[in-house]
Image 1 (cartoon, rainbow, N blue to C red):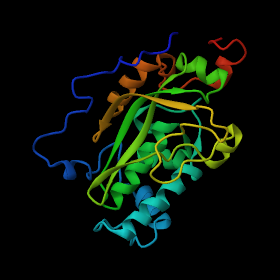
Image 2: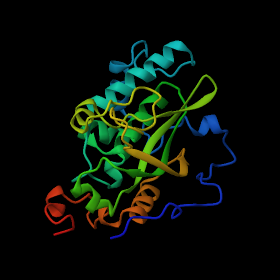
Image 3: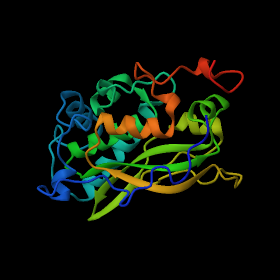
Image 4: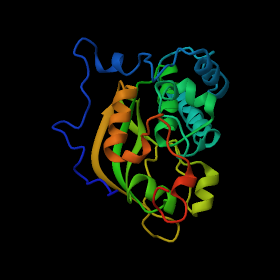
Length: 248
């Protein structure tokens, strides 16, 4: 399986279409099957993690909301285990509440949970995806995705009238294993490790997903990494790619 090209997902706009009947802000605040911020699990999670959120009540933006977004960032980054292998891609797996319950997932799942949680605060959010060249992956992961070019997921949230890139993905333990500093709030990716060696290179083709659907998510993953989307909609286990670096 070959690595995808930089231009494989290029479209005229690079942004998923938004309904004209709703304003951008309204559209990036509503509950959806994926960003299910009205779920009791999400309401409880936000109330517990974000100080002053008044049980998940959605309120006005400001310094307090920024701190709530920051608190949720660290809760997702370090509280949800990063794992690609044996991770679900069914409709039921691709919802913020499902990721919270599972307690694990890769960049897609963790970004879904964070985008869901901040919407509960009344902060507009949208998933974003981009192609990256990843120099951090293991041989098994490189074999799974077909090379060093990955479809990477993160989040954009609107604070103080501007869209801010947020990546609550790589937890502190994982970063320690790879010898890099974990990303902090409002950081998008690891460009260099402490020794100055390049670790992740953004290749462009950014796509914004204010209303991501499971079908659209799987379509993008399937186009980038066919081996990840199996008939049972579960990423294969690590053991299938051990040893030779190819499926066994």
